[in-house]
Length: 264
Image (cartoon, rainbow, N blue to C red; front, side, top):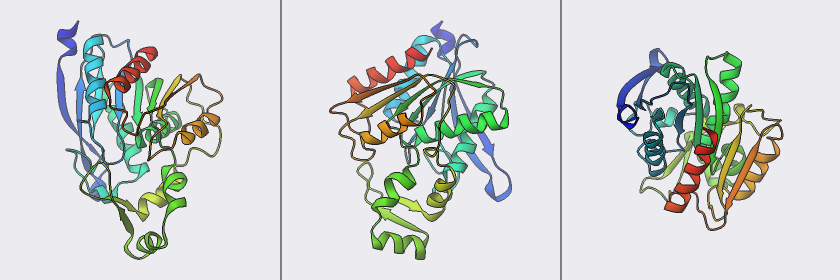
């Protein structure tokens, strides 16, 4: 079984046209059973498909003989495109294109941080567009839906608001990189058009949320709020008392893998 599941295919998918075209790097692990759902990694803001959790998801797929899909959003990792042009709409479009081009019929989405927001938008847009695949499960790790309006905007300083207005972006130090985080006015404005915490969210599949209670970036109360908008789904919330935002410790990875396995 694992011989087939060990085949990795690296491809590049062009999304958009003209000045909006960007080349998206995709790595697909080919599973043994097309009747089983594929695992699809949706990373966070400024993260990439070579991160610890993404690699561990791929390892789980290898061990289980499942198809696994990882990719980098435009402006991230090894994909093309300008990071500063990135928006939730743009990155959702790329996720949808990767899924549609993969040929998979069923998928479990594993969304980390911003990837949790992208996952919810993928479900909504796939349904609206009538795309030929189903989402059989969601595993959301420190999900940050609506983070632009809910988590960033309320805490903006006067200087940051001025920078947004005059320069079109503002910067803040990052705990995860020597380079600062950059948040553009386009990202903030587009985020307002992609909000999901404004009405009932119907995913049509089971949802498992993993959330650290010592997360400095996405407070665990945000996960509780998300649950309020998912009353129609089978939702499990695992609060990890000493967990941070990354949730990349061995014990955190074990919880992630267990949540994924429960979906397949």
